[in-house]
Structures are given as C-alpha cells and as structure tokens.
Length: 550
Ligand code: GLC
Image 1 (tube, rainbow, N blue to C red):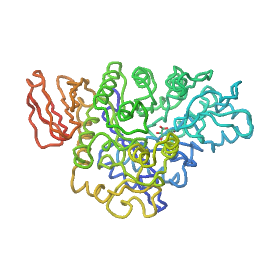
Image 2: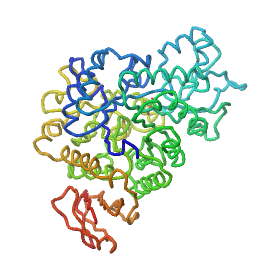
Image 3: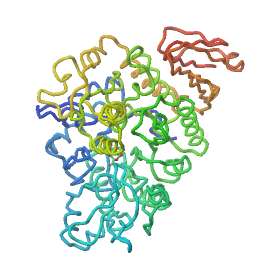
Image 4: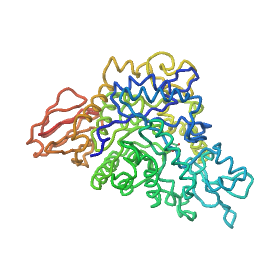
C-alpha cells in the first residue's frame, strides 16, 4: 500500500505567508515561525512555492538559479532550521521544481545569448519560416505569441509563458542531466516532496509546426515522450529514495494521461493536479469572462476524474485553491451570507474524495478574494496582460475590472490574515501586495475563538488519518444529475461512507436509496448539529453531511 494516502498537504505561498524582517515580503523564517499553526492543523507536508533567485517577473516561477535561495526569502541557515523544525512537528517539505523553463536571467540563457553553442542547445531556438512568419504560430499562455527574438541573432526562442521564461530543450540529454542534478541537490537538503511545475508540457514535438488552431497546445501537451522523461527523472532522482511524495502540475491533461503519470507501477509521479473542474466558470473556455459556475459540469468533471483514476489505479490531488486560482469560496459559494457553511462544505467535498487533499493558505480560515478596485493594486503579470488584451478587444475599463476582481491570480496571493493588527499581522513593513480589507473579521486569531472553519479542517484531516475508508475506499456518485447536491459514496471492507454536499442557498432534498437506508448510519461529520439519515434528506444552505454506514 502506498504510504501517502493518509496525508494532507498544505501549500504556503512564501511571499505572502509571514514577513519577519519588515521588507513586506514573506520569508522562510516566517514559515518557520508559523509551524506550530500548521502542526495544530495537522498537515503532514508543506509545499512552498519557489524561493530561488529570480527577477520575480512571474513571482519566482522565472528561476535564475535552481540551487540558490533568494536573499529576500532568507539564507541557507534559515532553510536548514526550517527543515529541522518542521521535522520536529512531523511536517516534511515539498519544493516547487520549475523545470520546463528558466528565467532569461539564468546563466544558461545568458551564456547562450553570448554565443555559447552548448547552451544555445539548452533552449528551443528556431529561425523564421520562409514567409517571414514566426517559427510556429503558437500562443503564449500569458498572452501574445510564444516566440521572441533571441538577442541580435536571426533566431527566436520559445516561451510558452512570459517572454522572460525561456522553455528548456528537454530533447537535449545534457539539459535533463543538469535538471536531475537540481532535484538531487534538494533531496540531499532533506526535502521529501516535489511539485513539478507544468511538467506535462516539457516534451515539445520534435519537429515544430504551425498549429491548426493557432494556439498549439497539442504540439507540446502530454506528448508520449513526457512519460519517458518523467520515468527517467524518477529513476535518476527521487525514485532512489524511500517515501518521496511527488505531484505534477498537468496543464489541460486527460484522465488517460493522468493514470499514466500517477499509477504506481509506471514509476512516474505519486499524483497529479488537473484543472478542468476549475474552468466551469469560464465562458466558452475563456478565463477572462464572468459567468456563474456550471454545477452539473463541475460534478461531471469531478466524477469523471474520480471514476477514471480509480478504475485504472491513478491518484488525484484534491484541491479547490492554489496560488493561480481565485478563491473557491467566492466562485462556488456565498461568502456574504454563508461564509462558514461555504468553506466547510467545499472542504468536505474535496477531503472525503479519493485522492490527496491540498489546503492552500488561508482557505482554512475562509479567506476571500480582495476585490481591489484599482488596477495598480494587482501585481500579477498575467492580470496586466489580460487587461491590455481586454482593452484591445474593446472591453470597457469598468467591465474589465469586474472580470479581474473575479479572475486575477492575485486573488489568492494576498497576505495571510493572521490577526486584526495592521497588515493583518503579516508584516510590519508595506506588503508587496495589499492585504484584503476584511482581515479584521477573517483572521486566524478570530478562528481560534470562533472555532468555525479551522477546527472543521482539523477534524477532516484527523479523520483521513484514522479512517482507511477515506484513504482507500472506492468512489461512486449518487444521483449525479441532482440539481443542487453533489453526493457520493465510498466503500471499503464492508463499510460505506455517504457524503452529501449542497452547493446552493435554497433548501433542497435528496432521496437516499433503500440499500443505504437499510444500514446503521452514524453521523460522522457535517456543518450542522447532529443529523439523522432519512429517505428524503433535506439540506440547508451550503450544508454538508457525511454518514458512516455499517
Ligand atoms: C504554473 C505556476 C504558475 C506559473 C506557471 C509558469 O502554472 O503555478 O504560477 O506562472 O506555471 O511557471
């Protein structure tokens, strides 16, 4: 049996977690200071977003040196102290490996620019097509074209993300060797987990061609060679160690590939993040729009991934939030009228599914989108690119701002709300990104008193550790087309776990099948006082309830 199915992983965005030196930027010492808080929550592993040297054009996902610590985050001593104190609390560290691209400030890119042939072959350089158009018509995921001029040569370099994030040439064995050295370096530092950034786009087609759709994803996403590369990386690095937990961030992937990436006997990764369920409030697949989320679609997608991965032995990461997503409680709930119910219902929906739950900083206290009115309050590069594009497309300023308020990645990157003092107790300096102004109500100290959301997460995490049915049980949806309730059943060694999650404010009911009613039902956990299971089970606003049936 796998060793990590009882674990829960917490994601801290170091820049916004806790600042200890007053420069307005969170740091490693800040993470260390808050370890008791994480231990209290009960998490087993702590994923930290990149803290390596970086010009920070994409908040550290533009790495200039993979084996360094940016001084703004701290020192090697700080990291060693963090690892060892975390271990004392039973928490292991998971680091973010951004191996698809480097910053254009990286030494390799700089050497390549200076004419060094060896390093030119580290990147993907091509000449213009005969008709003078770019090497391919692919688009950058951050807007604009995916190619930019390579110095004063006649070549162009590929960047699927920002122009300062140059894609590495994984077809070059030298590149792979260098990247494996990086992973091994961090393993030696005592790191026990890795989150691999956009790892399913590393294997570009050998011959790069224009895409029929003018976007290009199919020419570099989930190509068969990606699996070979991940297997090789596993063998050369973390696969040589016991109990390393890995998760791959998979952009636009499929269940079929998800299984391949995560089925234990394939020796690739422990699990994957997929994102289809977080696109159900995109109009025609376009992020920078605002429509209410499609509940049926959300359930269909979650169901497809739960069933598909279980059938073939794959493993899902379970999550609603991360540093790239607006806050889920704003998207799928009602933070005005039912903040506690919304947060606990969403938490329970995810935590009791088959897979490994990830908690993103602040969701355990119900943090929300900040709703900044001023474009200048947003820092994120993708947000600013999107604003420009919306303006070009004729969208008025006010409408564009409404969209940004709902969709910007900065929604989740605002400083962690520790208490009701200035800057929410995050920093004594000026925070790099403004604090959401509801911090006087929503903060960890208030939660300690009210025991609403944090305590609920704690309980969900504790239950997973104790109950094999949560770790290993099968999954089956119940009445998948119910208009307001997402219900599912887990089964394991003669026990049944029934989980009922109501996604709306209007009261509704679900009919419980007789074979479930025939069993003895014990109320396991829910966001209402004691409930009894009955044929027509009524659910209040954003109610969640789980019963253990024997
Ligand atoms: C991933 C990261 C995101 C980053 C992008 C490019 O999606 O989560 O923050 O911008 O990769 O590295």
